[in-house]
Every structure is written in structure tokens, then in C-alpha cells.
Length: 492
Image (cartoon, rainbow, N blue to C red; front, top):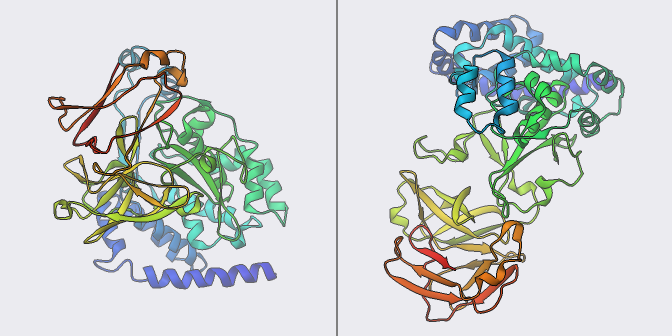
């Protein structure tokens, strides 16, 4: 009885908050009314959902949940092949091994993926079923009383994970994992983190594969192949379907690896997020997401939340999704400010953080710029960065390259710096040094011109190099520091 009373009081407080936020949401020119206009001929389906929950006072919190889903629905969509599942599954399974991919597509006649906007196609029946089942698992779990309504809305309630085709996945999760669902309900002291560990041990292990189309819960369970984002999606489907608040987190680019990475986090009773790597490691265990060095980390959100507010054509792809910056939740991060250059040329007022990897600058973060400085919050240490602004899809330096050392001290790199350093690595498969003798007498050259019409010799390799090598440059050498404006090459 005490448990129910506490839960009731807790939810009343959140209900009051959402009444203030959305109480007038269906009036003319209100946010909800604007979204309903976007639905066009499908408006009546969304209004049926609202009417359904308004009819019963006991469903007042479900009404707020429905409004949350609808208000944040614009931009959500399915994108998938309208072909028999067995054909899509076969193509997926053989895709990465196929040398003639176009022939595969032509033979199976998959056509092109079809995009369907949720707001124009979703049904009232689907939304109501999703909301009711989400509330059911929130209410019948012992940790439910510790999950605030706003956390529930983001980490249990959403009816989709990505851009997969919609299905009644909650019913399928509850059926497929019925035994453990019952045991979780019966354990009165079970926490969300403990439940996450138990469920995670039951999930199928994946074979890593790439280039898969977006897959629903059913297709992920049937295929058990894909990259880290597919595995994170499956974990989120199952956990949320059982009432466990789970997010999908990621880093867009590692320091020393060619790509980024995705993982999951579970929200504990204190509101802290504990990371785990889908089906492979459990909360509190070590995994790539909490051990490898990263520049930034983000969490995907259902609600409309853009880190950068600018027109879509000018917004880099990374920041076109709904994200929240969670870099502060990770170790070995620092906040810093650097001088801004070319302030008058930054038309948009937005400056981004680019990480240097594989001879290119890859966007990984966003900074705040004022009249004389750029501020970056919670960025990884010992990583080479360049502040840039974007103009017509082109990255232009907004300041000098820099890095923050392990002590949190910032180091700016400029052409006239007396202690400029140049580092290079032996070239070979898997850092194989068996051919490092071939680098002797190789020459590094620099130029301000992409075609190397005006060349300066920077350094000559006189001895066989090791794996990592540093060279102190002569003070009178002027080295272009922006690969976007100048160039550097190694002649073997």
C-alpha cells in the first residue's frame, strides 16, 4: 500500500509539470495543433489517440505520454524495402560477401527503400497499444517507482528505435521473454540494473557484419548479424519492452580507430546511466565504450533535441539527429577555450570540433564562439583537434590546431611555434615494422599549394624508424598546419 501511495504522489508531481507544459496544447496555434496540421489526412488517427485518453480521468498520465509522442513525431519515419522478408533477409546475409551488389539487388528485385513518415501513416491503434504496454511494464516492475515520468518517456515509451519498419514489437518481446518477465515482476527488490544484466545474458550474440538495412525487432532476432548499432537496437527493443530504461549511446569517431562505436546505458534508481555493450558485456563491466579514448559521446533521444540549431542544409550530418551530449559522463575529458581566428568570416556563428584521423579532419563536436574565443566542453584529452566552421559543406579553420594533455593543459600548434613537433608512423599492415628499412632517406615535404608547386623540405629520415617517432623541427621551418589550406607529403 505504501509502495502504491508513493508512486501515486510521485506521478502526480510529474503530472502537474506536464499540465503546465501541455495543458493548452490543443488550442489554436499551440505546438500540438501545429503538429496535427502536419499530419494532413492522417490527423484523425492522432486525434483519436488524444480523445481515447481524455475520455477517462484515470488515463491523464497516458494522455501526457501520448502528447509527448505526437509532439515529437515530426521527422520520425520508416525506411525499408517493400519486398518479401525472406528476400530482404537473404540479401542482408549475403550482402557483404557479394562482389556484384547491383546484380544481387536486381535479381531479388528489392527496388529502392521506401520512406514513410510516421506522422502521415501511423495509426491510433498502434500508438494506443504501444502506450498501454509501456505503462504496463513500467507499473508492474519493482524498480518502476524509481523511474521518473520524463525518463520513462525517453527510455521506455518510444514506439521506435531508428528508421525500422513499425511492428507490434512490444507484444512480441513480452511473448518471447515471458518467463524472465514474470520472474522480474516477482522479485520485489530487483533493480533496473540487475534486471538489465539478467536479460542481457539471454540475448543472442551477433556476428559482426556491415551494410545491413534497417531492421525491426523481429528481423534483428531472426538475423543476429549487423554492426554495433544493430546490436544496440536489439538490446533497446528487449529492455524497453520489459520496462527497463535503456538508451543508445555512441561516439562518432575514435582517436585511433577508423570509425565510431555504439553501446547502451541503463538508468539506475538514482538517475545515473550505467553503460554496457549490448549482448556482449553487462553494466559495470569494461567495454570499448567506457575504456577506449574518445573525443565526444552522445545519446540518441526521441524528443526533438538538436545540439546545433541551424538550417538543415548547413548542419553537418552528425548534428541533424536528435541527440544530447553525454561526454561529461565519461572519463579523461576536459573543457577548454582557445583564441578564435577569422571571427568576421564565421557567417553562421557555429564552430565545430574536428578530430584528425587518417589525414583528414572528421567532425566530432561543437563549440560555443564569442568575440575572441571558442569554448569546447568535455572533450577527450591527448587528441589533435581543429576548430572549423562550415560553409557550403566545406570545413574552414576557425583557429589553430590544439590538444589538451593528460594534465588538462592546452597546447596550441601554430606555424611559428618554436617547439613545433612532427610525428610519423612506420607504414605497414598492422604496424608491421618488417619493411621499415625502406623508409630510410625518405623525405617529408610541405607546401601551401595542393599541387606542391612550391615545396619546402621538412625532414629527411636518416635511420630506420620505430613504431612511433618524433622529430624536433628547426626554428626557421615554416610548416603549413592546416591540411585544409596546405599540404604535407612523404616521398619514399
